[in-house]
Length: 161
Image 1 (cartoon, rainbow, N blue to C red):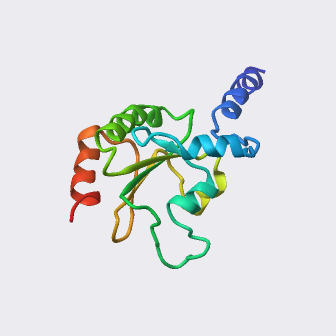
Image 2: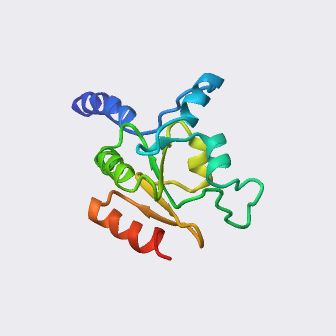
Image 3: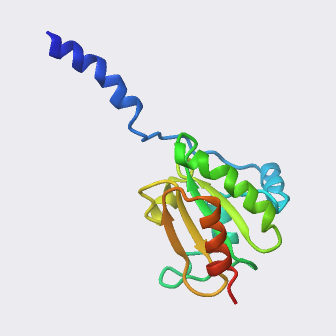
């Protein structure tokens, strides 16, 4: 009987903590689209798949080669709203967006809202950070990193000439 009660009490814990939320897909209206396109460059910009294909890389048209569409280097933060380490990285990215506003883009992709995009990039752990230089291949880092490490990667990888 004790085992049954114990199992009964643990079941909701496992269900609540599995991290597999299935949010409904939201349609973005034209009004929201115009607000997104006019966001200032000193804050991270949230992207959906359509915006990613337009602003970053259309990997559906070019599945075998990376073709970056941006005009300056970028960082893409694959995150989830419930993720503790993601919440720790968010203010760092906000600061970096202000500090490097004329030099790089910082984009954010909510993996719960954009599950197809996250799957296309093989995101299995969050936060996952994709660093995209103007030339060459992007590099992915999994896990939270500090501001100094971000700055080192930006200066030595994204902004090197």
